[in-house]
Amino acid sequence: MRAQLLLWSVLGWWVALSAATVQAEAPSRTVVFVIDCSKSMGSELGAPAGVRPAAVSSVTRLDAAISAVNAALSRMAGDPSSQCAVWLFGHRLAWGEGDQPELLEQAAYLDATLGYGVLKDLLPGDDVEQLLPLAPVTTARLAKLAPKLAAVKAWGEIPLYLAMLRALDSIFFF
Image (tube, helix red, strand yellow):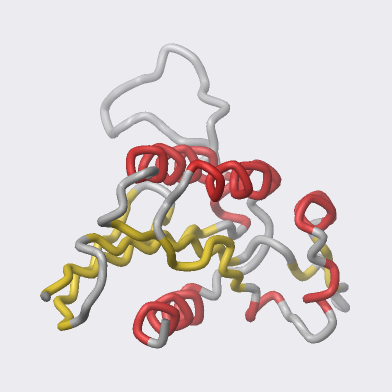
């Protein structure tokens, strides 16, 4: 059976879609969302070039990315022929400002996910987390995921390369 493997990276204004065909016994659709939660994703969405918005938007790039992922997951829920995973990066740790920057924690997210234990050896450049393991999407899994995604704030650095490597590893060594 040939399965089409899709890896989505939601980065601000655009969605990069990479496709690779693999030979495997797997559901017909595998989607992995890799969400950029770095500080730059806290910027507000702007209007397209040449268009002046009627009012200033308070929707951030991260809000739009999470909304798009939630919509896609809702469509996939209950489809036994598809499976999905969600990865986040840049969402738990950041370096402070100044000559001797201190390590800053995203306390709201860590409280919501009980995730303080992972901070022991973690640095902002390694801040990558699999929020939803690769499996079929069910309403129960979405219910567990929703409060975690709601607690995410644009926060840290951009370990994109590491996030993509870990996401790909989770697919091929599942």
